[in-house]
Amino acid sequence: MKNSNSNDASHVFHFFLNREYVSIANAKGIYLYDDKGNRYIDASGGPILCSLGHGLDEMAKVLGAQAKKLSYVHRVDFTNPPLEKAAQKLCKVSNYTMDKVFFVSGGTEAVEIGVKIARKYHLDNNKPSKTCVISRWQSYHGSTAGALAWSGSTGRRSDFFPYLNGSHHIPPAYCYRCWFNKSPETCDLDCANALENEIMCLGPDNVSVFLAEPVSGMSLCGVVPAKGYFERIREICNKHDVLLMFDEVMTGMGRTGKMFAYEHFNVVPDILALGKGLGGGYFPIGAVAVPDYIHKKIADNSGMFGAGHSWGGNPLGCAVVSKTIDYLYEHDLVERCDKMGKYLDHKLEDLKNHPLVGNIRGMGLMRGVEFVEDKKTRKTLDPKYAFSARVAAECMKHGMFIEYSGGCDRGQSGDMIMFGPPFIINEAQIDEAVEILSQALDKDLLSDKSNFLTF
Ligand SMILES: Cc1ncc(COP(=O)(O)O)c(C=O)c1O
Image (cartoon, rainbow, N blue to C red; front, side):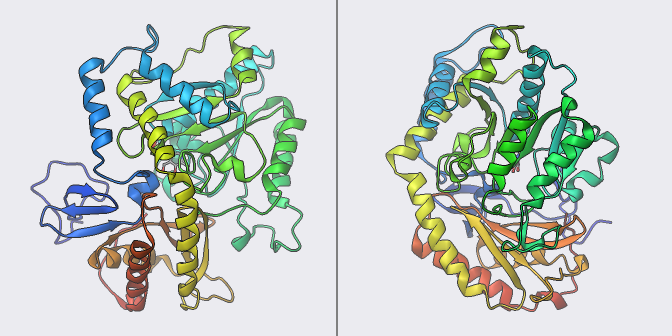
């Protein structure tokens, strides 16, 4: 049923089909401006994507110059200078932990290609039965049938369930709602050990890769695993010859205060998927990076990897990647992200006493807030309130866009929002953003009876 706000004049097939959308006409720094001149703080950088800030002349120039020189050539038939340069720079920022890069057009494609690289590695290693992908509940890895099947976000999976085949999920590493009823003090990393159980049940000879976000994206909004979790995961993967793939589509390129989130955990993945911040917010691009031994196995055996998409490795996107990396370094933005993230965390502390704020978590400029009905029992709010969607809508009224999400309690309920602003945000802007959230929470949103669609 359409609501009274529906915008019938538009020919756009929107996400919310009956909502009147604000039209953003231009953007600068951390601000979005609508076509009526209203200003909004972009507190989530879109979907935790715009890392450098909006409206940078340097990025526009790079795109314009590259478009004039060479806008497209197919990666199957040719290489090109921006592609070579971007791959070299990306490996360099990993301190050559990663040695080869496969560029794609976004995060979902990166995840799909990463899983296919794992498959190809095992084929060329004479282990063709290793096909299963294990991932975690309450994760998100992308929206195509493959990436959504591996995702564990119940809400995002539900409509497309019939197409989601061959997925195996273990519990999330989510201390606030531990599936094993442990606390970090009594925990023996049961959530990591669950991987070994799953591998044993499927048969180690059948398992190809374990896929995980090192810090959870929107489906758990910034959950950081318990100490030692990824070390245990790495041990289990090594023991059973299962590749470890990190989905750093959201966390990569500085977002957690280090260039790659794996640097926080003393664990190096076999396959690294990147997207979002890889293009700084200026071009749709993703990548899969692998260490030398993965590439060599394929190069020395079949010598071909027959996967990919028409736009992969295009010069426009690759020119943007190189400029993004340069910009991050020239402006010390990764360090700044760490510093501003700590400041944001400190400011969010002020909200801890709010009766509905259950948990605040995250790393760098990726900070989630989870809301609850009862702080003591951690009971979630009834989904009928669509509480986090209401919080976000209220923030918009006060001049701030913020991403919201739900389903953290086993996919059925739970409310969260996540801050993920551009790294250039300063203390005063953080103060303002947190103040806007605080004002939104001070409103009695639970008694608001207006109809709200959420997901
Ligand atoms: C962790 C993670 N992986 C993969 C994706 C999919 O990326 P994209 O939407 O660019 O295809 C997302 C998007 O939100 C994500 O957060």
